[in-house]
Image (cartoon, rainbow, N blue to C red):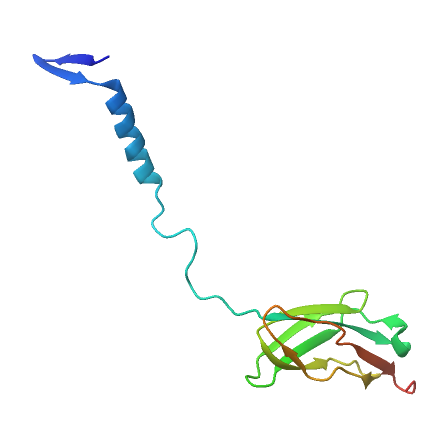
Length: 138
């Protein structure tokens, strides 16, 4: 079915189907993003995870709100997290070898700490536990 328009002695034939298709094409061009949806930019390499607990009284008391820091032995990059109310911590770090540090409070002493840990891509290095004693409780 064609639509005929008469404009001052000029005749214009318009096919509604063609008009619809042209409109859809114009709208699709307007909706096209100017950049890719997936950002091709570089991403930090998060290789694996380190987790453990911080306790006192020989492991009987969980210590929450304690800062645990993983230090990359090769690069010196530091990743820090705070322990939960149950004394647990988990951190995601790039692949590498890490030493773990615990921020102690004034009356505390470190009884046990984890050895350096090697983290590979996809690893979960669990059981990296700290045990703290109050001064005079060792």
